[in-house]
Image (cartoon, rainbow, N blue to C red; front, side, top):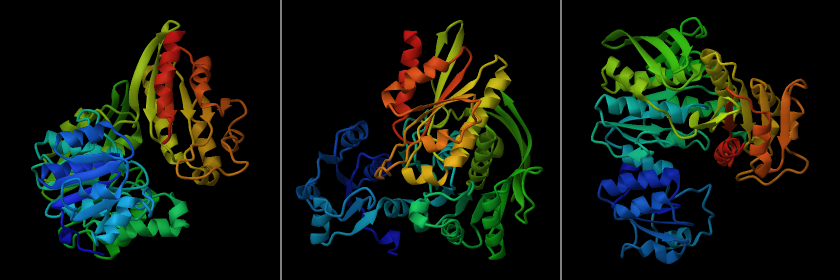
Length: 487
């Protein structure tokens, strides 16, 4: 693997520059004074922002786009999964012997010289990374960051800060997290996923073990959730290899593990406003209890906040100030994101949107919603409007999805969002709904445009409605609100 420090980033061309990941890194490059060019299939707000920073962006792909700045770029960045190999800009880059790198390579290069804080895991990466960034910003550390989602308050997913830390989400889906050199590495959890790439659970778990081995020797830390069986096991194995490993979680819930707890959850309560929690910290030079109120419900979010608390303190933040930043965190787009409420039939119906697309994630967000309505005590129910993501994942976890969705009081299940996959003959979301409890109100709705009407037909005053999934389901949230207002 090429040393990221050897990349020449003076003139960088990014293919697919308008994407959420690419555009964020392009902004950091532009802010650092690089000549930035790129191309995308359509205009967008991220593209306009980049143009306002001096980047030259072409709409459509053509070999001549490499000369947008007047000179050929020193490096071309692409997504090998999303950009076909016969893309004219890729062909031209190869013909001119211009180095081709992936987005993860560029991120690794941008992190050089910083304290690298990498947050990984099957679930919760974006939320945990976002919490850490917000808390560290509140503490005045001004970290650089690159996140998979947009911070609600900051309205951005990347920033080139003045502080020593660079905080980033480490994606395991294609093993790109192995391109980094973390000083602080967090594993929130580990559960088989992306088996279309890894083909086996063992191969999937191994990528996290290999990530642990990249932690800076002697001075670095691997931080694992002690409540998660596989994350704790990865931590134990890393500890036996001489890596500094610390854990977090509730003492009564954490499995028996040799990993020392650096953050212990001593109190937790679901309130109408979110989650009230108290955490005992045991870190080098720090023995302190901190309390804070999270605005986002769910035990899984409390665990994410504990990982962010550790990362912030290890990065130089004062514990109580980091905790204040966690309390100030208002969320990430599409992570239990509040989309609106409508006064309806003598009560209020609220709509939230969430990116959950794995059974464990779906279960976590529905448990959080149930705890929230229970704490509010107004008799509200939880209605899930779910769109499965990928045929392969749906077939792998159909029973688990059915079990997770059964945590709702009622559900509308759309057909599968194939994304990069082609339809599989005979496979629809019925393989999920057929396994759901017979006594539960469940609607299988293959017509996307009818979903909002279905949801409203079963809604009652006081209900929380959740649109859930990684595909186009997010568009339905606004349609549900419109449908409620129309009635």
